[in-house]
Image (cartoon, rainbow, N blue to C red; front, side, top):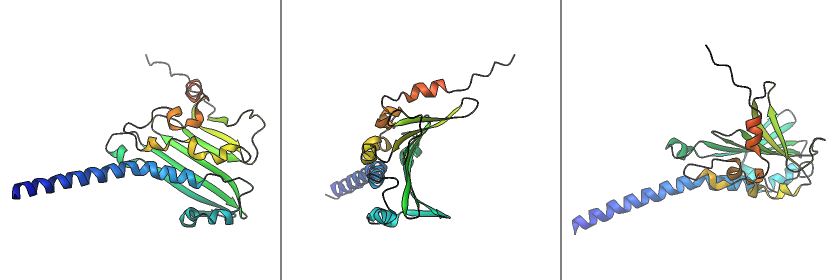
Length: 209
């Protein structure tokens, strides 16, 4: 009987450890979902800081101010999977900017090893050159090196109410992660970010002789 008791204890420990590990792996996806829900349905130039603070999530968020502008900051990453070498490091952070009691900017940035950073930004008014929503704005250096992308939409766009659909939170808990923009950011499907990335690289250096 004692032998069976020891085996039962060992199995219980193994299963408990496996369950704890599974929950730890799933935690980043849940965190991403919470962040996306928190910044959903906010309208730049219309939502007030008082309205933000009526949401319980904003009451405990990191808030930093510089002069008249304050920023609420949220972030999530898959550090555990990355440390176990089971997925590339993937990070998401969201910023809500407030000035004089009014929201002046909402952005969500996704950063993943192997891909350029992509920032979804809600603005009050789109640049004149934007002919579609979301509007793709590549940040390219003078030497044609692509730094990152911004996907712009204005405060009247329905995208402000569909933020949780724009990013695939499960990528933060997938083994091996998500390898393409379309997987990681469903909003980017059809925007051909891979093609833009390939076209905006500097020319190769000539080989040394």
